[in-house]
Length: 131
Image 1 (cartoon, rainbow, N blue to C red):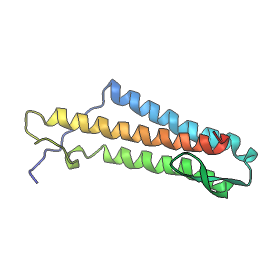
Image 2 (spheres, one colour):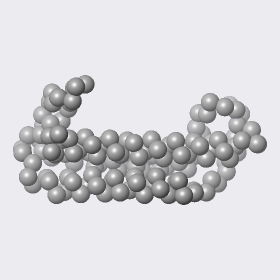
Image 3 (cartoon, rainbow, N blue to C red):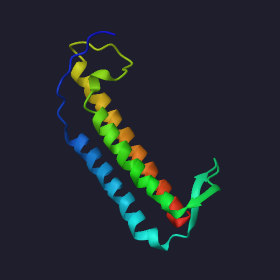
């Protein structure tokens, strides 16, 4: 592996927008679980097959798995964003493209973080409201 410079990449408006959306989605997961926990049945859906039908049930306390996983993923991806020089890029890193490639890599990781958290929100809503 070739040497890759460790550069400080400063966030711009798109980075802030994605982060705000991620944090709001994280807050939404916790809010829905807290508000609806007492009204959940003792047995909730814990697994869905490819068609979206429930194929496994568990204790209602398992609903906390979604917000806990969301926090873990949020923290993990936030740490990963600090190390764009470690990513596996499909292009060679040169002095001319290093900032642009790192910036794009960081945006991709932020978007993946948002998508994962949105999916966890969807799964928690599906479980709570049996959509």
